[in-house]
Image (cartoon, rainbow, N blue to C red; front, side, top):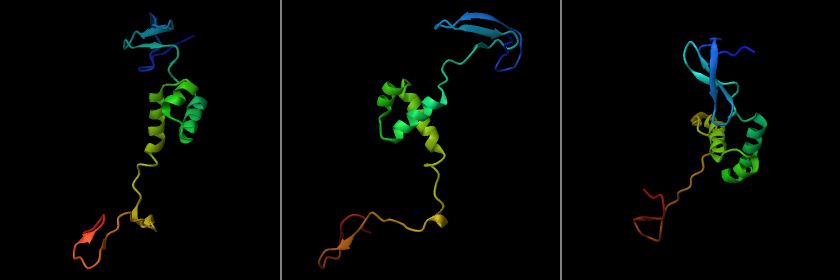
Amino acid sequence: MTLQCPDCQHQEVRNAGTSRHGHRRWACKACGRTFGDKNYRLIDSQTRERALALYAEGMSARAIERIVGVSHNSVLNWVRKEVADQALQPIPPATQQVVEIDEMWSYAGSKKDPSGSGGP
């Protein structure tokens, strides 16, 4: 089995002990970076998709954490990453056809001053 450094792709590595969880660690002889055989923090795509689907159904991030078994911070980071390219993009004015206006104002009786919200 030949390991190579993830930074410099150098193939000469030495044993650097174990992680606090008991997984073997390696150190690159060229750049000195330490790394493991595998990134145990990675979460498979099926779990990620399930968590996003539960969030889309209205479940809270902490409830998803309890059910799926991933951190609520991970769930919220995945949600932010998914909507960053979609919801935060401004809509070009040329593509808009209908505009909805929420404020309304009117004159009450014969007053010269407008009443209501959104007046001039």
